[in-house]
Every structure is written in C-alpha cells, then in structure tokens.
Length: 204
Image 1 (cartoon, rainbow, N blue to C red):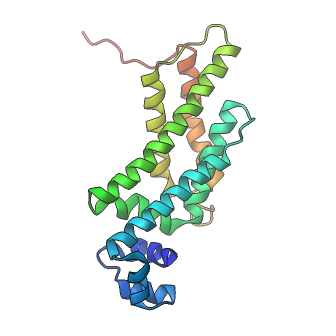
Image 2: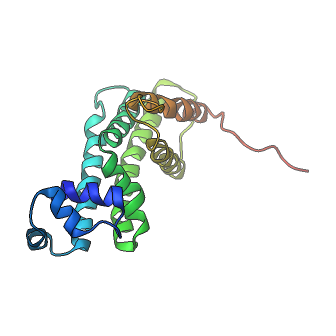
Image 3: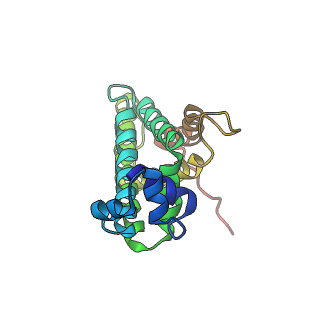
C-alpha cells in the first residue's frame, strides 16, 4: 500500500490522488487501506517517513568509511544521487509534494534534511581535521563555516538530483553528478583550508 501511495502522490499530487486510485494500484479494497492507514493524511505521512528514512539510510550506507575524506564525501554524494535516480517517485514525494502541502509534512522533510546536513557536516569536519594533520599551515575552519558548507552542499545536491539519473535521459549519471559537486565544492574547500578564501575587494 505504501508503494502505491508513493506512486500516486508523486504522479498525481496529494490533492488529486484518491484512496480509490491507491487501493487499485495496491490491488486491495479501499476499506482495507483505511483499516491499516486510517486516512489519506496518515497514508501521506507514512509514505513521507518511509521515503525519508530510505534516503538517509542509502546515503549513510554508501559512504566508504575507511577511505580518505574526499572519497567518503564523494561516495556519500554518489549514494544520494543513485538513490534518487532509482526512486524518482520517492524523490518527487519528498522534494515537491511534501513541501507544498502544509507544515506537518514539510516538517517531516525538514527533519530528514537536518539529519543529512549533520552527517555531511561530520564528513567536512573530518576532512578539515585530516588536512590539518597533513599540512602544517592549514587553516582551522570555524564550526559555523563547516555547517554553512554542509548546508550549501546539500542544497546543491537537492537541486542537481532532479537532473541526475542513469545518464540516459540527457542528465548526468549519479557518479557524474557527485563528481560535479566535488569539483565545485572540494576544490573550494581545499583553498579555504589553505587560507585562500574568496573575499570581495574593498569599496571606496
């Protein structure tokens, strides 16, 4: 029933998806759907929670734990893009539908995003520590900088996920999308750690 719900909500939208349609997709009776999930709102919430948990699990599982910091971040990004490409309805549910149908659903997605951002923050912080051990003149990043970088990287990944897939539809593959973000973010992070951060020229 959750599979049917995810598909119906993602493709028709919350308002247009009916319990009759979901029951038909699931191959069960409408009363059975209500028996197990009580209401359309409860079904929508259950679908969001399942897809959010699956995405977080996929990202964590993809990280190569014993690899260098850059490889860990790349593998996590690859896992994110691979999962969203393999589960396009789940990603549409989280990225589009859940965010546009009220605070209770938006909060579920916000909680998922917070968990991913915290995980990416840990990876970036580990990269900074690794770099500090290897380079005597490496700059120490403030906690706010690490958090800001993590938020920016996750936001960029979310935007790119709509285009990333298996590489056959004109968009980049999951690994290509991850490499794009690594080229964009990792090179900049390296400069920042070396004390070569960007700053606007003084005016006047």
